[in-house]
Image 1 (cartoon, rainbow, N blue to C red):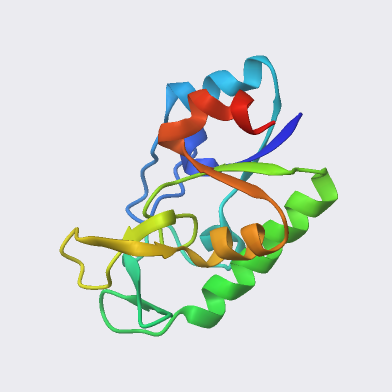
Image 2 (cartoon, one colour):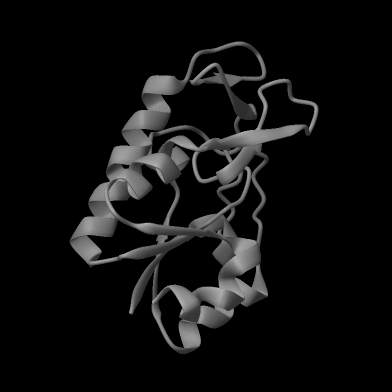
Length: 145
């Protein structure tokens, strides 16, 4: 099966601070599945590194106050395109991210507090029928296939 995966979880240095969120549990999925890496923020043309962003009142703002909602939507649409073209019906995405978080995201205060909600790309993928799992549930993927 083909699985869409946040590229940072595979060790790609595309995180806002120039690093990654390498996750061996996610990487091990490649033993049984074809992993399709995506980074909606990179797809949107945002630089690496970049100022961190969070969602507040349905919009994405960088910590320095710039409204990046349109950029995040553009990146989300490109991630959906990759998912559809690749035939992915399931995605393992970075938890709490303003792009990829699903169920919980940072609250927009840049204090580390989370609230119920979904990142821009995660929501678009979900709305188009793709099952979304955070990296902490990667080892339970067989239950969703």
